[in-house]
Image (spheres, rainbow, N blue to C red):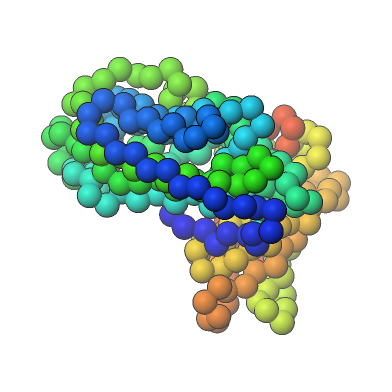
Length: 275
């Protein structure tokens, strides 16, 4: 999973990298100054044969880290599973994130204690699995620090349901159906650098000031921070799209993803119709 990062401001002093490798048991990383503690929760085997593990981050007061789409002021998380054994695919189930104001821009992420559940599909169901790779995240306070966390973990064949992972699975954004979304329409117009996309999402208010994060479904497409406002029952979001590789712009409406962040709930909307 890759994302194009937003612009790095001079105040974001990227100064530190941390690496740790362990062979057995839970894997932990302890960056200097207690900015963040990282632990892999070995989890359990689900009914479909996938193993549910958790990446647990314990951030020191005032520090935060970033969601899969971190915003213009954030650092995108990167995951590497190379070297893993009996793992065909890894699916991250991100808990509902929060909006932070950082250097006059929005960033999207987490503070405090967060668990990111990960479902590991086996190549051979029932056989032993080994989780080998690395996670690169940014943790920020007055400065931003890149943290590299390497892991090599032999997963047990059994395991018990972990309450921290279960709580994070419950804390997922609401689906469009559950949130009462009755429409999602998109209109696009060309700009000098790509496209301007305006989405009209028909859904009940989600509480307080609402934000919309737009993901294009193509890592080569950069998406600006959304201008968001209400027009009656509709939440309207406008973003600029451009290709980071300079290629031709093609818009796949079915791949567009809209995450609505309100004070009361977070809503996940996938796809839109022409409008």
